[in-house]
Image (cartoon, rainbow, N blue to C red; front, side, top):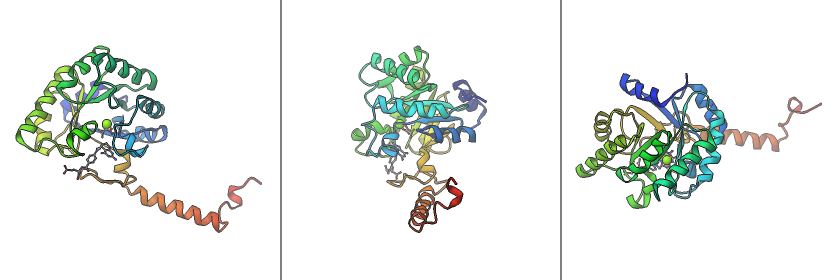
Length: 265
Ligand SMILES: Nc1nc(=O)c2c([nH]1)NC[C@@H]1CN(c3ccc(C(=O)N[C@@H](CCC(=O)O)C(=O)O)cc3)CN21
Ligand SMILES: CC(C)C(=O)C(=O)O
Ligand SMILES: [Mg+2]
């Protein structure tokens, strides 16, 4: 079954939880899609997990298009969302529509995601009017890392929580089809999920959200630069990969590999 924006809405209404993961390439997206994932995000987190930057600010439109088209080739059923990189939508409504259009035209993705609340509502309205579905992203928005002074949980104080709730209502009003809620207290995740009619997709926002998203390297245990509290490791691939590499190195040195089985006779 093809997963669509309309289906995400129905899933919220029927209480069926939405599962999303990030992917940045063909093979990874293909396996996830075959596993039955509902949505795949080509996140600008690729700057950190694929490119080794310390935050997401250096990621370019070209990076997003390069990885977006690769992931798109592996997707048959999932809803494919592409992140708008830092400074591709803040500068003007016109820039936002042009760049959202490029992401869709040049990748084959189905929707775009951008970070922010009321300040990006004109952009959300205009992109939506151009028939491109927009996923909003509020709470701890990583592109604001310097404004926040680090990747810190947001909305702990009463007034800060009220502001994030207002941001959720304003992006819904602007036409966002879903809202990513990142790193906020569980109670705020629950309050926002109740207050808006579109699905909320949480990452470190508690169990009440309508769906969840994780960075795939985090959930597979193959990214170890840091481990946020919200990350559950469903595998320990770094360990598995390291030991496979070590076995290979030893077998090459000891001339165990390649045996005749792996040679053309
Ligand atoms: N690998 C990876 N996973 C992610 O979830 C992720 C990225 N990269 N890159 C983009 C953003 C950055 N994110 C982050 C990065 C660090 C924390 C973190 O260390 N959080 C602390 C909370 C600090 C506090 O108490 O305020 C934690 O302990 O979880 C959280 C989210 C989420 N996104
Ligand atoms: C963590 C998710 C929500 C994201 O924006 C990303 O991967 O870039
Ligand atoms: Mg992102």
